[in-house]
Image (cartoon, rainbow, N blue to C red; front, side, top):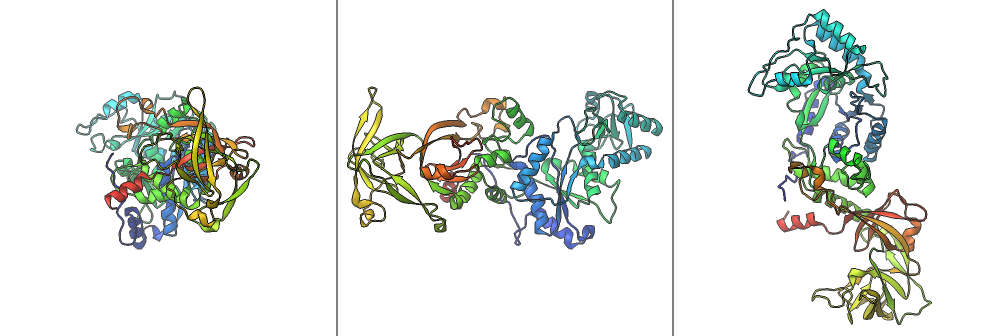
Length: 569
């Protein structure tokens, strides 16, 4: 497996390096001792778990140090944005337990201020209109070891630049025909300083401002200024923005002074095995129907994780375990699964479900008799109490729990061997009935009436315990058994089309699962359950009054805990 860093180093006060920087700034009285962070998503897709790591820091740091956190949508590209994404982002942030209060903003709130600043920079000789194509501009940028070449339009007169920029915004020119560039230094060792583009022409109407604007600011120009307009003190972002930081500071200093200036701090992105975090690739999966949508439970999106049954506390626990560092890492999905499993073990109600049923008939049990067996709702929390489950002569058990000729250490049901039916009796297999092709249709056994759970005979020990459901009262349900979306550990590092690396077995649908009636009567969308001996499952929103659908959230086997125990951690 790929080597990873399990935890980030924190200081003696339990603070990661970002929190240490914030604490130092506050103690030094910077920005008047004020803390204001922000989370600035683009409304061009759904948030994924990597975004969760970001806004857990943004909102969490504000909470920890008594500051505030803004939610600001970076809505500077109307060609890719949609209100569907805006509402989904709000919903996901709230689901994880954070709130921005009255601090909801949009980059489009500052379009006029940004436009006015751009005109001021043109007037001061710090920006110019370039008519070259994007390919020509890229070719003239040079390389990290070779200086770039000045644009032939770099020394236009100020009045001409102002006129062209105003006309660009009036829609007089085609998209791609002109851009506004900052006039900085085409020989700078930082490629981002080689006259970066500040504005481009986009004629698509904006979902908030309509057709008022025909030019839209680039991220590097809009972001820092928007931070300044809002009073943001700490702009926390991921490591790919490290080379952008000098440009962030260059543009911000067009507005800021010693009394107040936003500061950018970077941390490592969340990369996860067996998935991709590229929003572009996730969009491809959705658009090409390779998944059922943004909320497909195999997706790393927050809405997909929610639908699968992951919980806010488990996601926060995972992010806390991997921490925040200044180096990139690939995190094992097993650690995320471990966090989910730990949380659901404490909270999920235990129920009985048989996913591959075969009939077990207790030949010495009265045909018309039904008993109610008492089942613990959660042995991890006795306060959750118990519920009743009907027991009868005919039961469903897992087909895999029976073998006619078992290996030596097979402790489930086999001929003339005893096992306990969970919460009920010890039974002994006496035979089977097969169809013409040799497939087992029924298993026969006798039960020992002295061994019912709760009676003195229940103390008799047998090695195997099976879960079961009564045939007369069982309710049929559908289970969607999910596995990793990709068949390779790090699809982003592999050569070739990432879509060809998809796991063909990432979804198996079982439409003949038998569940106990107590579960069928009370299950509601989003509820979490542990199916005894099978795993953790969540009720899917596709469920209807006549058909329950469950998503497999996670299995019971904890490979991460096993590896950590083996390594002595």
